[in-house]
Length: 83
View (spheres, rainbow, N blue to C red):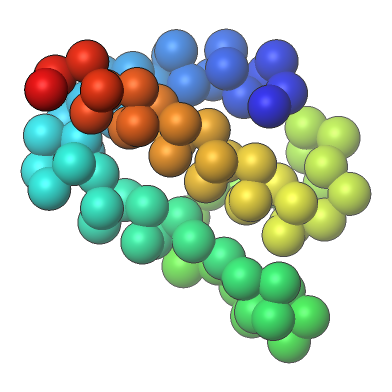
């Protein structure tokens, strides 16, 4: 996990919490998922977060995967601390 991801995650905590409260964030994680196959076929991710040429990622796939993992880790943390 890269430091900017953590910083951005903290800035969007309220938004993530509202998604988490709806089926533990599954709908958001579904929107953030982006496969290597989709990237190879040059299919754009379904989320609207601009990852192209930013944050030092090599590719849109790498940036989308990093974002997905950070959100997934946050939701996992929330799940462990609620139950």
